[in-house]
Image (cartoon, rainbow, N blue to C red; front, side, top):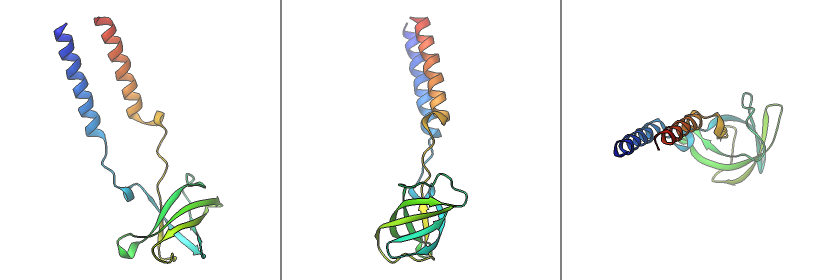
Length: 136
């Protein structure tokens, strides 16, 4: 019985170590996608989203100035998307938004069941439970 506990503990620690090593280190703007701002109004602006069907109303993003090392210009909320053009409402700004700035929007995370970690965890749990059931 003592050997079974040691083997189970080692397998658990190995699985935790593999999971920790496989987790990527992400920074905020590394995951965001850039979009060109096409027109600017007083409190709104439009940006083109030609190949991003995931951009939808209600999403939030930031506008940055690429000439100032992506310095924050404004925060915004997407109000609508029609024909590959998104309309955004400016929520707060540090300077006036212009067409020289770019909009950054982060794609939504994938569904939990489409990640390999979910399926590998499920398989490990089923195998571990089966093995413990057989040994006890």
